[in-house]
Length: 389
Image (cartoon, rainbow, N blue to C red; front, side, top):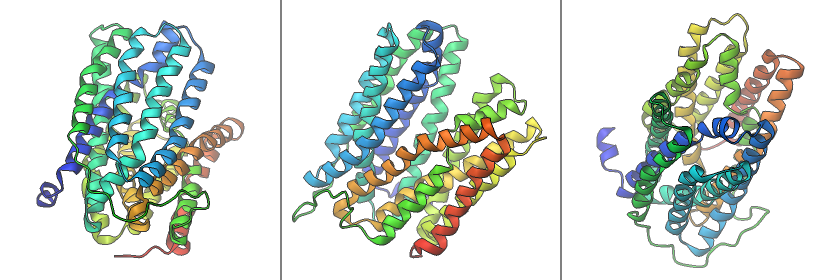
């Protein structure tokens, strides 16, 4: 596999490095925002909920818009450079924030950047490699992204342990932000396809019934895929000490980082369907076990490592499957629909999960999520009927 990795186009590696440094910056800042709001700006949970709700909803809607427009005009690099630049500019400005509305504006700008870049970036990545290397390319990209997700919180924890003031830590986002933008500028965009450009259609004209069924099944799975914050809250309820909670999530990201490339590359040979079904099955088993009572805290470490296997098996393969099912001239729009399907359902998924946990029991909430995952796996196999390699 090392030989195959080294043979990947330069653009794939550059996009991986972009995600590595960008995610390290994002995960350096993101965990500190609740602390900054509560301890420095004296804002409550309601302000945090408003900020994150507006930010994430904006990103979800813009991913469809940017994907469709990039298809229409045949250019993706400008969206990638602009999206990452906007995020890199907004993060250090948290240092100047004197009230929670300023934090809202900065988080909004950061998520606008994410919404503008994500679908065109995935389309650029898919267009750069042949079909037989899509799993490998997306797996490498996700591995480097997860590497940033490990590095960011560790740097934040180290800076806090060294006594660096919370506000000053935001300035540390300048250097990796500049590196991120520099890598985006070095990307070379492939030549645009000749012929007329596709027009956007809310009826998804130009996409196969198989692709549409895939999105519906993905929606069912996402309905049971609530915020990962619930997993960490459950770990704390089961007796894990507070200081070990971020380390537990770092373990999950580390496992995903190590396994993303080999597992996603496996989908190039065994088929995306088999790998995604296996990953969703792992997800279902994980949620059933975590929802059980009388769970010893020491067992949380191998269990969360098991969750990292789910992330590694699905994140790259799900994106590669989009490229397999979509027309080449509509890749941006295809990723836009993919990301919007996931993004729009994250809020109701978290609301349903939280309501079941609070009004019924934790076991019921985790069983509901497991049921959605296992049901989606069955539908993917027997209803969508995706082609095997």
